[in-house]
Amino acid sequence: MNGADEFVFVALGGLGEIGMNAALYGFGPPRRRKWIMVDCGMTFAGPDLPGVELIYPDVSFIDKIQSDLLALIVTHAHEDHVGAIAALWPRLRCPLYATPFAAGLLGARRLSEPDAPKVQINIVRQGNRIELGPFGIEFIAVAHSIPESCALAIRTQAGLAIHSGDWKHDDAPGVGLPTDEARFRELGEQGVLAFVCDSTNIIREGESPSEGDVAQVLRELITNAPARVVITAFASNVARLRAVALAAMAAGREVVIAGRAMARTIEVARENGYLDGIADFCALERYPMLSRDCVVVLATGSQGESRAAMGRIAEGEHPVISLASGDRVIFSSRTIPGNEREVNRVINGLILQGVEVITDRTHLVHCSGHPRRGEVERFYGWLRPQVAIPAHGEPLHLYEHARVARAIGVPNVVPARNGDMVLLGPGAPGMIDEIASGRVVQDGTVIVPLGDTVFQERRRLAYAGVVSIAVALTSQGELAGDPDVLTSGLPARMRDGAATDKLIDEAIFATLDSLPRQRRRDFDGVSIAIERAVRSSLQAAWGKRPQVHVLIVLV
Ligand SMILES: [Zn+2]
Ligand SMILES: [Zn+2]
Image 1 (spheres, protein in one colour):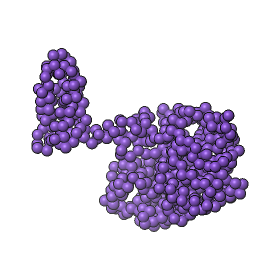
Image 2 (cartoon, rainbow, N blue to C red):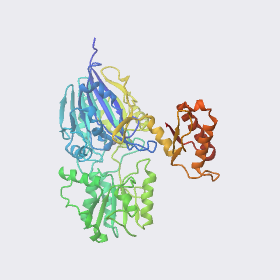
Image 3 (cartoon, protein in one colour):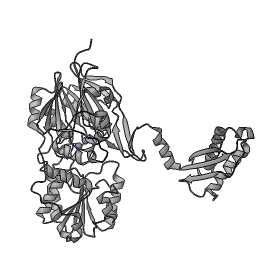
C-alpha cells in the first residue's frame, strides 16, 4: 500500500534564525511526493567562522527528491531568500519562478558573476497563477522593503496553504502594490488550511509606520539641511531610494550614487519602471563640482561595512566623496543585531569630522519591512487558518508568534523547526518526520559542512599562532644540522624577556637529548615528543599553546 495523498511542509532554513530562508511543500503519498521549493537564501557568518562570509542551508534532502522537485519559487529578491541559489544551483536544477524585478536583480547580482551557472528564470507577476503538478500557485502582492514581494497561495486537493513571505501592512508603500487585503479576505472566505507567516517583528506591539511617513521625514530633513546630505539605506529598498530622489528634486538638489549595490538596484528599478519620472542621477565624478547645498548622496554601507561607501567616507578615504563640518548624514536603516560595533565606528568617524548624524533613534528615518504583532493578528483575521506555522524568526520570535496564534484561536499551532516535516492535511496536522537539515558554508570557492574541524583549527591559529619546525635526522637518529624554526603570530619575546626562537630551540634540543638513540629512529615518536615539549614550554613562558607542526626529514 502506498498510502494516501498528504500535503506536507518542511523548512531547510529560516525556522530558528532570521536568514537562510528555504521551505519545501510536498504533495502525494509518502515516497512518491511532488515538491516545490520556496526561496533559497543565505545568512552571514560571524567571527566564529574565520575566513567565511556566507552560510547556506544544507540541501542534502533535495538530492533525494531532485527528480520530483517541480520548481523553485522566489517570493522576493532579498539575499536571505535568494542568496544561496547560485551556489547551490548544481543541486537544485529545477525551473525557477520569479517576478521581473527579482529576476532582474538576481541576474544583476550573483548570476552575473563570471563562473555563475546559467539559470533559466520563468517570469511571473503579482496576481499570476501557475499550475505545477498537483500544486496551483498564486502570487499575491504584499508590501515589503523591496518591490514585487509575493505571498504564495499554494492550492492542493488537501487544501490551501498561504506562505506569507516577508510582508507588512502599508497603505503607502512608495513603490509597488500594498498588501492585497481583498484577495486574502476572499481566500479566507473559501477556507485556508495552513498559514506559514513572518515572525520577524512579532515581539513589537502595534503596527509599523509606513514608507510614506518615512518619505515625509526624509523630505523635511533634506529640505532644511544647511549643507550636503548623505543618506545611507539598504541598497535594495527602491521605495526609499525613490523617496530620497523625489525629495532631492523638490529641494533642487542633484542625486549622486555611491556604491555598486545601489547602482545595480537603480538600474533594475529603472528597467522595471520604478523610477519613472525621476531624472537621471548625477555621475559620481561630478560630486566635487556641486555646491554643498545642491547635493544629496545615496550611499551603501548602512551596516558599517568598512569597504562600502559610507565606511570609506567616514574614514576620509572615499576616492570622490568627502564631507565637512555642517554636512548631514542620515542612516535611513536599522542596525542589524551584531553590526552595532561597526555602525558605531562609522558614526564616530563622521562625528569626528564635524558631521551631523541622524539615525532612527531620534527621527522616523526608517521603517521595517516586517509586520508587528498587530499586523500579524490582522492577517490571521483575514485568513482564519486551521493550522499556523510561525516562520522567519529566531526561537524567541517563533515562540512569541505561536503564543499569539494560539491566543487568536488558531486550532493547530505547529512550532516547527528546520528539518521538521509537518503534515498539513488531510487528518490531524502535526510533525510526522524529520529530514536532514543544517548549514553549509562558502569557504573560498568550496562549500563545506559547518561542523568541519577546519574552522576550529582556524580559530586556534587566530588565537595562538603556529610554530613550524623542521628537523633533519640521519637513519641512525643523529641530528644532521640545526633545526629550522618558523613562527607565525607569536610575540618575539616571552614574559621573562627570553627570545621566543631561543626558547623553542632549547625545547627541541632538550627533547632530542632525552631520547635514547634507538627511539630517535622512530620519526613519528620524535615528532610527537618535540611537539609536546615545545607546546608545554611555550605554555609555561607565554600562557598559550600554539599549533606546532614538526617535520622530520631523513638525510
Ligand atoms: Zn526575509
Ligand atoms: Zn525580505
